[in-house]
Length: 324
Image (cartoon, rainbow, N blue to C red; front, side, top):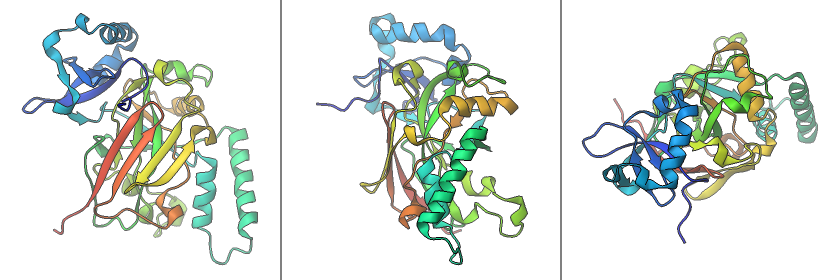
């Protein structure tokens, strides 16, 4: 029995045939793709009008031009959408935050590990009560396709993985409440928010804090996709399994139930300051099980496979940067 590509009747992606420019495509579960002759962002700009048309095309392929349907295996799969803005979330899974804090613990810390974990958990509870997610900005140039190789820069001493559920915005959102935030999400996809742990913190100026430009925004550091699955097909985004394997070994396998701030609260929080636009991405944080936890960071030849319930699977091979 074949593995289902994604949940629901259809998904969107961006594809190219040899010698042709990338174009948005409608994917149906049997592995055929209809060239929509536009971009995914253009579809998202008109999402409320386009969604019924896409449903009809998926339900009855005869509604579309027969010659435009192509087998998926003949096409290159690109990132499903080209965002203008990327909103990234840090410290949003309880167990992940606790594990990171323990990994970075000073050897002079007088607390036992159990005491340290309890104190960190209390801080997480306080953040949740005060409604203070941690959101920062990423660069669209870091986005890569779901099956592209990622080049590990020579300067990145500790490259790490962080698989994340990602919301794709379907209408302009500014100062929306958490109660209405899900209405602004067109669908969901997968992002692997790669991070060089060695450059996260500024050692020359500790008071400045984190350096997200250096640590997260190298070209290809955000493998995205493979699909944009409509929100109506995903169900509850607060009950999805996020799993990543490294060379076949499971490293991350956690439910989005472990989020401190759910998807609606993340979108609402970002919209308090910024106007979110169609096609923008809201990455919602990564669960426990990154390389720092395992004491095993990325190196040349590693292959990561990341999957989230109903959203498909991405596969990324790591390649060391060639010496200049």
